[in-house]
Length: 140
Image (cartoon, rainbow, N blue to C red; front, side, top):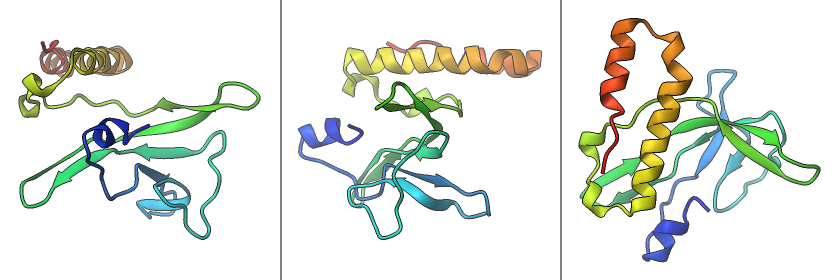
């Protein structure tokens, strides 16, 4: 699913989409990961595991785009797991070329920024809250 939008226009990315988060100071700590190919020692993803969520795209010799959040695996039903984002930080909208985005992508960024504010505001002092309010202004 993370690769779908890129694959629809003939692109992909070579790195994994997500990996376990180190508890022993290793950034890419398994046994869980989300990648095109599973490796020896990879584990199934289970409830309570924390993974990175980091899709991206790199155009050789030109630029790279990558976002990253952390998510925890939650049980949705007896047979279905889902992911809940547990790290929240705004995107630098000055780096986003909005003319290249579809309306649903703009809506998602605006939703994400509002959720970021909702999750963090009560943990911030007035100066920090004011800064966050400014950087999450809706884009169009």
